[in-house]
Image (cartoon, rainbow, N blue to C red; front, top):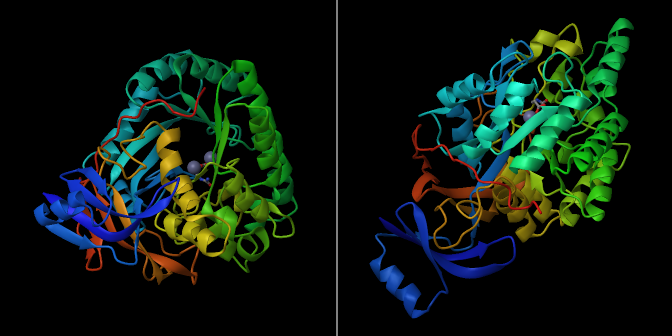
Length: 470
Ligand code: URP
Ligand code: ZN
Ligand code: ZN
């Protein structure tokens, strides 16, 4: 079936122009200048015309950091692949890259197979996997080669969570050496977990058990220190490194310095670090702050963290905005830590709101429209080996397309969101702009009438190597 999206403004990472987009089946057939013979012929032949007057026509969002059904903190992340990927679609995200998890002592292959089984036939949008290595040993190192050949080309390591996911510096170095040989990208959770556990225990021993102590036991200096250390290990190994959920100015400084020296060092940040803070959110009265417990934690408002992060997005020291979607309900999940912040499952859900929240950066004058598209779609595709199948509106690419209405508004609330969460971290946010129509591989899955997709619409994506490595 052919569809023509006409009268819209097509926005890419490099520019914006009036164009008609012809979709044939699952892919984009042509991007046409309006009024040309080719555009007139395409309109005459199209089986469906979609009017995008007043709308931006952008490549579907790619959320490179989600945790559907993650077993963590004594419970499971509350979105399944079905509910979480559908919520992603509502928010204009047409690809998710989720983290399959190998825990210490487990076999990498078995763990990955578990993730394939969880996602198979469930997703509303296309999906791919990174692999978390919770135990870097000889067997895991060997599996890294096999996985790269099979399209899992990035591996997350943790400098935090001793006894759960933690890798020591030797393990990190060995995995990085492997990545420097096989072309993989190492993603790093950079927080000094050994020091954090000491601080957390000291707070708890003093009876300081409220959610805010989660943040106070994870100082930004310890994110900066771990980021700097991981960069040195990557340089020794000759490997690229990508920092996930970067939240602190100190960490950004380390990334920027390495990039200025020409190294393959990259980072993402997340909407929560751009909009929420330690005092107002993590420090909210009573147990409310539990809603905002995530790691890296929200940072103090009495510092320039948020301003620096927006600037990092402009300068490309931060290349990507992902959500680190790791939702837990308050009831029975966050409540596990009512008596002790250390037992609150770490994570915030937001897969549905990333495109809107970062578009808000355009409205506020922090980012250009092109940079919105670049950080939310094009760069994730390039960084994680999905380009040009994803991340661009161009002939031959998948027809993952969002019509975005800058004149409409989005009210974010637990009452209207589609994530399986009993609260919204962004409750009451009224933002300019709204996802109007979402097409996934040529099928309209979201329109003004609602959701038209089905579970199983989304396919597994085998990824190539990052195109950013040199
Ligand atoms: O708090 C977070 N970020 N939970 C998810 C796990 C991780 O470290 O990304
Ligand atoms: Zn992490
Ligand atoms: Zn995460």
